[in-house]
Length: 308
Image 1 (tube, rainbow, N blue to C red):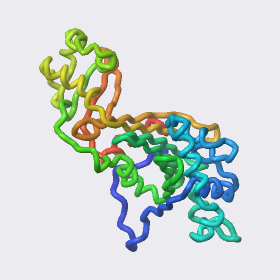
Image 2 (image 1 turned 90 degrees about the horizontal axis):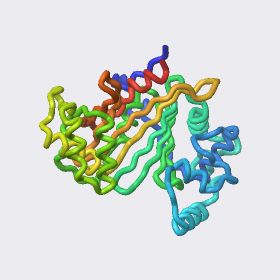
Image 3 (image 1 turned 90 degrees about the vertical axis):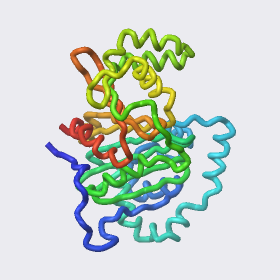
Image 4 (image 1 turned 180 degrees about the vertical axis):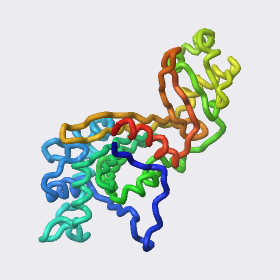
């Protein structure tokens, strides 16, 4: 069984620049051209000219109105010729595509492990695609579908790159949360209270708590007082300011096999992981305070399950 260690610090580099991720800012037209130059390598979303912006928009999880769609099309049209810009940057010559860029695009097309990451916070959304194979990782990320960050690096640098993805935007002001550092709660209760709050029926929360309140546990696996428990479970919904979702999959010759998901929610005091699990009493959810640096550790068991 293949394992990916996301928790061990990387070995010291021989030189300052050795092993550091190489990053490129690359526009969508440049990415399209680079993909063609790399043997028409498939990428995480449809980059063909015929697909148009709508196809990319669907993969980004956005829904633009007519005005926004016109602005997006205009932004793409205003970009310089991709052949000219890639040549000016030394990434494309008569001999072909830069070897590092071609290798990164090739890795995006032929990974062993694939992570699709969706982060939304502070009114913005970032989509990132991480692809790993043979000790190397390539990543592609964008927040607007016009400019992308393409990076590639050794697998022992992956944990640091994952923490970059989960970094909380500077304009998000943190404060104390009503949700404890760790809370375990029946999954149906979380779902039901969320539906009641979305429907404007906060009066139903005490009724729902009467049936499950004694099953809500804190960090020490001790029951939380009913009033505090009701406040905490409701806060999981009312304090929500963002989300992070990672879909992990193994890619084989037979296609994508095995899949796992990691989910975080951004509450008043920062990120909290949401981990569902099954007990004899039914499905439960563990809500735990986490930091961006914890994302690799949180993903380790998910990847182990995917490639088992």
